[in-house]
Image (cartoon, rainbow over all chains, first blue to last red; front, side, top):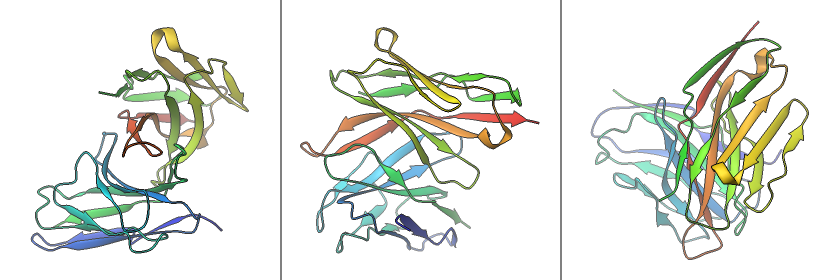
Length: 112
Length: 118
């Protein structure tokens, strides 16, 4: 089945550690996105990528980094510089030039 | 700046009741798109509908209907004869062109938690 796969579903991290969330899609979409969701809040854009080897900061990029070496993959690294990393992270993708965005199942990150 | 307001934080209804979720938006764009997504307890956001600013016709899909009124900047969502499986958080979103064109981001409201009780 075509879709967006995020892993792991649940992740615990100690303070001061970096952690990488995986996002893979087999929809042949050019554009990929990372959103963050906090309880009772809407989604906020962290980073997006329109094509391979290119990505742009979203509204809340501080403390995060990404790479886009392959069309199918857009991993997100939550660095120790992110002051409040505990949240639900959603990866998404879309056809370039088309504004309907499809989401993965999300990853819960908890800092302990 | 774009803004989406979902004033209803939580709604609770009894099964078979009709329920309307409100969405009000702000944008300076003349062309824009509005969306509704459903987020069940599993967490994934499920796309429900996309509507462009030039199409003010109401849309119906089974028990779901959407009322777009440009004059009041609203894009409301009605579920008729609600069911327990409709329980979820529902998000309204507004598209914004980014990155020099040909790509978009979505600005989301804070969501409305709908609980349908048996």
